[in-house]
Length: 247
Image (cartoon, rainbow, N blue to C red; front, side, top):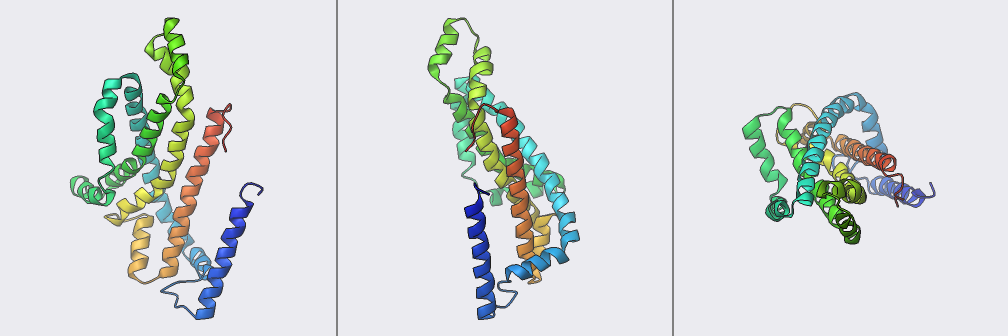
């Protein structure tokens, strides 16, 4: 509470203002439901939201895992071999100029409406922060230590394992936290474009039916899932890096 008390207090204050504005001006529910009505919608559709959330969580876990593996492999290659970085790093940056909404329909065409397109979308959304953070972390390691180890006869792999990788872990976990907040959004985007189950499907159906309170309820669930993934990464970072004081 000492750390997040101010944020929680301000958030509650904004909810109170929101509730008061909706009640005072008599705003229709299909335009802007009140926080109380959103809470009721959460309770009324909890079973359905849970069913759709499970599908989204599966997509996130597979896509996030794929992004981590691909990001670590590429970052390690670029850290060990400068020529690989010269070739691949500009292409990785260029890939982020392509809107994910433009790529997702192609994935649906190529792979159908099954799980795979959604997993790929999540991986594409999460891949860039992980890779770039790890690459930048590897380069930020003290060069004097590397030179000292080279003078002592250490191989590039030994330097990477004992100096570069531990030094890059804070940056790596920072990238993981960013990706964790994007991962659920990536899964929802994939579901918008073609799926039979998931929070994106739930949002589309309720939006088309003008059930705005249920749309907000799904947004609440998406935000909570993102916070949970972010929290899990933060806890993991404390175990992996006990020496590093997180702020």
